[in-house]
Image (cartoon, rainbow, N blue to C red; front, side):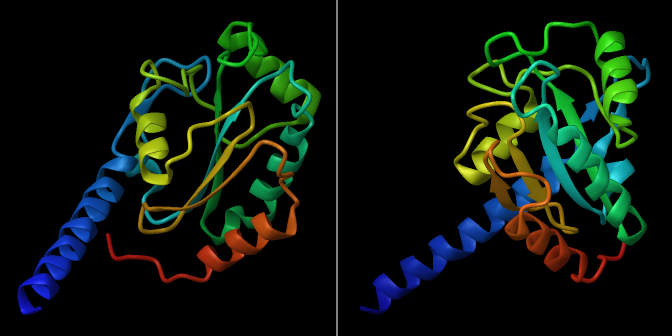
Length: 187
């Protein structure tokens, strides 16, 4: 019996180490700002913040969520929150434009000011490192555009929400507010 308890304890410790290692590396990736040239390391730029990472598309039924995402970003930015958008053309070619075209569309149509990054692949074996890590951490890869991953101040994925979850959904807002109450880690 003692040996079995010891094995369980060891597995729990190893699982905790794996989760901590994944959290430490999740944001240690770099992407160019949309239509930009110099890559931004997400860990350096957003460490200690609560993040909502979203794969976006300009020609999707969920595209109007840009407005709600911008509203969330504005509402909580002063508390250490940011929406990070990653355009993707993975779902039925709903983001076919160039990065410059995507940038203009988001800015002119929805007034998007939250950080948008380069066009990426979010599914399957070709997914970028960030999206591979998000899928690994949650067991859920985006099934469509506007899938949302909530990252806590410690860099861990704390929740994910399907495309149909609107940015003003009470469960999403409550999760963001809960994470914003968590203490900031020392850098």
